[in-house]
Image (tube, rainbow, N blue to C red; front, side, top):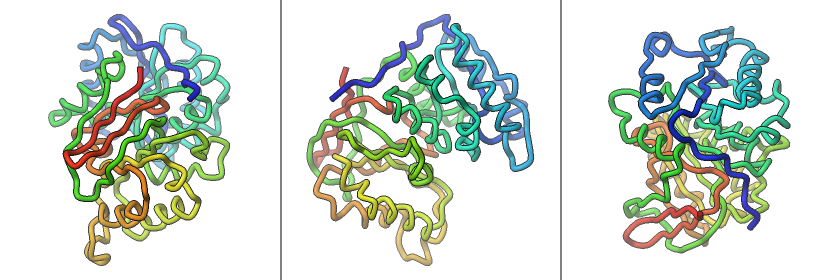
Length: 305
């Protein structure tokens, strides 16, 4: 399997750029600098994007072109070693449309975020560049210490893998493949784009989602099933599915519905992985080759060096 390009891990004294790639910051986020203090406590220098605090109709963090300009500036700045999205929300696909995507390949750097930022991860996966699906400043606070430490370890190259508990929906087995994916709704939204993940290489697919209605969750899972995505994946890792509405009407939980699509698969499936819109939110290296082993005792996700 051809390796992806891996940006250099961070070290104390490095600079990270923090910007709004999609939605605007909440009023509370505008007033706290906890995120900056946290990053600086890791020995990092923080460079906020020029348009970090902008807002525009539609709850965007300023104009599409301005969000793209902050990303472009960070990619071209030789001092910046990582780009961290402040939050997700909505707008990443509009930002990508306004970018010269060749810059990601010409100046590859770590990119951090989850949820709507899955679009950027998809772009990088299409280029063969590793990235970090991890906690963002908007999600950090008093109850996020484990998530914060996971992000720190990811940036500094200290994560070798994860161990999970057993789950009644798990499928046993062991495979090696490249970890791809992210937020389910954004994976589906990328279908038909130049950066859709066709899983042409051996891939381990990760999915999570938040604040969806059961019928919409069903439709997205059905889309991937009928498109052959689950069949092409060597394995599937199911993360957190949070705040799903309509469970009473459907008379089952969100994970029960996910399992209806996973149950027919004759391959390893790991449920209960703590990554998504809750804490702990463990950081994942997307694009990296890993071995997934699921046993009656639980699961192991081990990254290749």
